[in-house]
Amino acid sequence: ILIETISDLYEARAAILAAKENSDLPVFCTMTFQENKRTLMATDPITMVQVLEGLGVDVLGVNCSLGPKQLRPIIDEILKVATIPVMVQPNAGLPILKGGETVYDLTASEFAEEVKNMAQNGVTVLGGCCGTDPTFIKAVRENLKPIKPKKLKNKKLTSTCSFKNTVILGDEVKVIGERINPTGKKKLKEALRNNNIDYIISEAIAQKETGSDILDINLGLPEIDEKEMMKRAIMELQGLIDLPLQIDSVKADVIEEAVRIYNGKAIINSVNGKASSMEKIFPIVKKYGALVIGLTLDEDGLPKTAEKRVEIATKIVETAKSYGIPEENILIDCLVLTASAAQEAVMETLKAIPMIKAKYNVKTVLGASNVSFGLPNRRIINSTYLALALGYGLDAPITDSTSEIL
Ligand code: THG
Image (cartoon, rainbow, N blue to C red; front, side):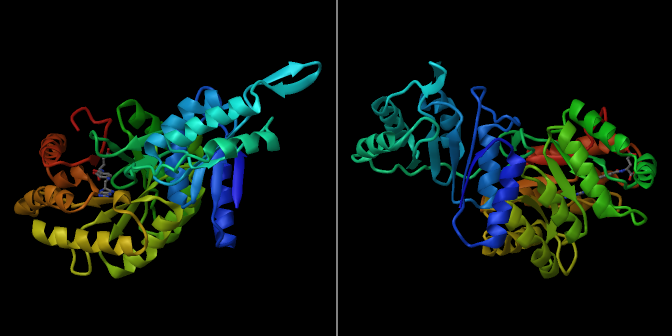
């Protein structure tokens, strides 16, 4: 099934899901870009690659848009990150009006020369779009004869994205804003009861302005319809804020509905080492190509030692792999509870971080502010513990970026 000439990532997602839910055929998807390297609806090449690869297409790329010359910078960006075959069907150059008719400015042989160039750079499925005809395709075929398909050597990134902004985890610390969570927050609870989406939006903006890279969204309140509220909040937020969203719920059906309507590659918060949790969450992670946070607890609870946390992380990663989820899409949370109850345990959490990262190519997150529950001077405890955690290699704290001392 070839899905092509798509300007809206949301439509690409819908079409791919429809194809996959109704057939076992291979799915190719190509989008259409403008010279500013974005689709009409503002998706950039790297975001397209992250989302389409996540959804499990077999081939991705570009068609229509521009001539092969103008497409070069866009294709270069795709080739830098793609880990599956890349396809391009350019137009026969740029359109010009000649005697009241639209014609394209490249000849078949000029076109075929440019297309050969793309093949040499790593594009492996080639053809033509507007302005091309069988003579163009024949010239392309002749020109490609001596060329061997080049295999791309890119490694999968750990990335999350909205429809127009990709955040890569691992290179530098990324902040996951925790404020959209009713735990201990009177005003947010009230807003949720009153269906006050504006309040949620204002919390999102405040977090973006103070440096959050990703927003955690937890709307679990017993007296509201969490699924409906989650859907509404996502639709509103993704229209206004370009930060990727982290879907935080204890209910698998809320998570599934949320990642289905989210126009991007979400983070799912969370799965844990219990068989019942992994069975419910991993199929969703796989189907929608999401990232998932694995909490290091299981049927026996939260372990005391770093070694036991590594054991549970191992179980989570290996089980995820059996569902076809790549290591790169897993984030491990070594979990910290309040230091008031267990002072030694908070250091075991930190020790586990480098141990897990040495074993697998996974990134780590941590809800660092749990450390200070029930204690005075929470902000100072939080910022001190967070600094320690970053020293141990934490990739992304879940924290409150609006706090002056984190
Ligand atoms: N790991 C993962 N997800 C998580 C956590 C984690 N999600 C939830 C939590 N922990 C992180 N989020 C919060 C949200 C709120 C608070 C702390 C962590 C919090 N609330 C204050 C209170 O309860 O007193 C109220 C603060 C305010 O009003 O501003 O502290 O560990 N994967």
